[in-house]
Length: 153
Image 1 (spheres, rainbow, N blue to C red):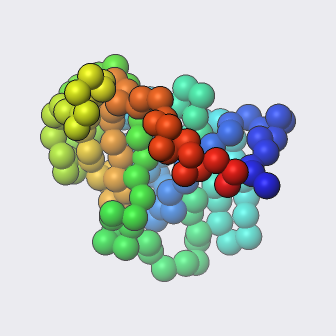
Image 2 (image 1 turned 90 degrees about the vertical axis):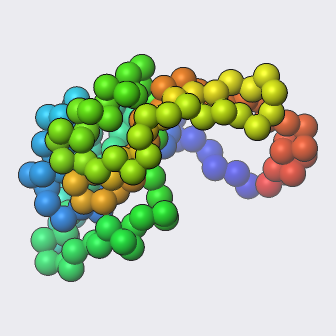
Image 3 (image 1 turned 180 degrees about the horizontal axis):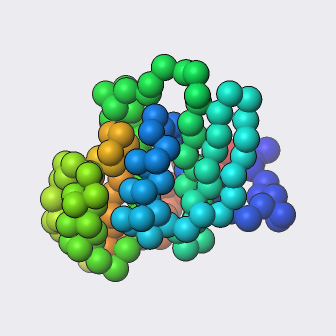
């Protein structure tokens, strides 16, 4: 059996970060990057803020009494991609808002001739979560091999 999309779901996919400093993180994502508040969830011992960006949702989860989530523990384990029309500008905006640029604005060159490229920037937000600003989309239709490997799963 495969996932069945809940037709009542506002978003089919949501991404979340566990955060340590809600004020800093809300200012970064809403104030500097332009995300919009959507909703909140009050969980035992914590709080989740839902932030909209286009047709996507970012969840920021904070636990009052839990030890901090260290950046070193999160790096290279997950990242979020934000599709934008101004990746180079967002590098400057994010940096000015306290982010660390870990891969400056550059172009992705596909390994297959004819595939689309894109420009991108990788930053760490103020708590060390990795965020990619992608300008253009390198996605291409799934190859027959990939379709065969995933058929019936």
